[in-house]
Figure (cartoon, rainbow, N blue to C red):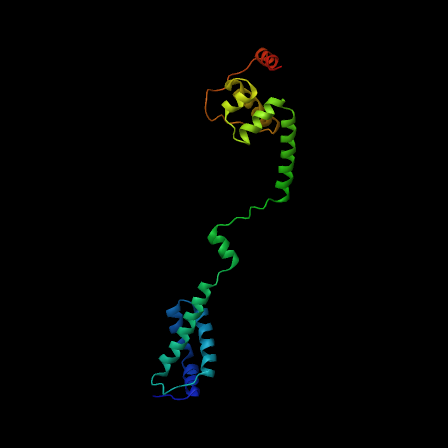
Length: 193
């Protein structure tokens, strides 16, 4: 049977709606998408201008609905929400919360106090070595002391700051630290003066 006007196509649509929906649901894998596509197809049939007669109206209407569903799926794939983009890029909000800000400020104040408690030479060696990347040999030349003495001053400064900040220092290389007796500490302090 040949159909040449939009009203006859809408009649085929209405009479075969359940079959159209079942076929589209099977093809698309979603009853909701099939229903949306059929609704859009109905609206398309309202404005369709036929160029010639339609010899097979049911497959024609099915094809219109199927193409509409495919266009909808493509649009949905192309649309990316901000949450999707963040998840895809694995972005994490690095902005610290109020507790972290307060904690960091407190820790900075403790570090300033610990650095202020160091001797002038320890402070200079610590800053030059850790902040400016000056070699130990260069620091020894600057201060007129041995490289070993620079290493000791640097170690004392780092340990002092770690102790004040209640941090544990992990020794990465070198010999294990030995226990220092109070006599050795006193003699070391006297040689510094």
